[in-house]
Amino acid sequence: MPFASLRIVTDDLDALVAFYERVTGQQAERPAAVFAQFSGPGAKLAIASTATVAMLDGALVPAANRSVFIEFEVDDVDAAFAALPLEGEDIVLEPTTMPWGNRSALIRDPDGNVVNLFRTPGVR
Image (cartoon, rainbow, N blue to C red; front, side):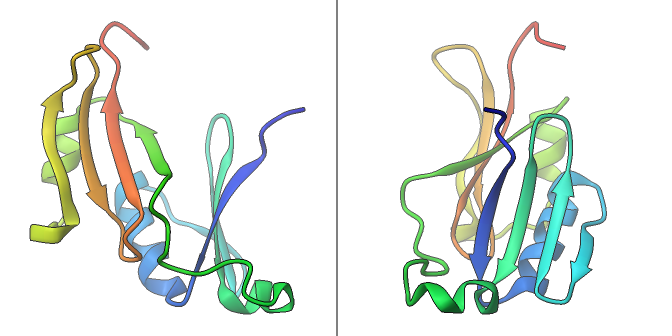
């Protein structure tokens, strides 16, 4: 079974889409006013308004994630990190070489989800 996408449900679709447009360097596909997605190798990142899940009676709560990283492999972690307009609480971990060799920077999106910009040495 192929992995298709990860979807983030939000109360502020436009802010989240703008953030991920900066992170990915690509424009979101907007097939509907309440939905956007980014396509890339492997899977899609989808972002949807809470209006798209209203019938689920509170099963999904925006800005409440405390257990999932959204990860993007980048060519240069330090450059990708420096290119984003980040402030204090947006930064979880400045660019760091992890004990297993990856270079990572952890930041928060506007809903507080943790985003990992990383590079695995010797890959690509």
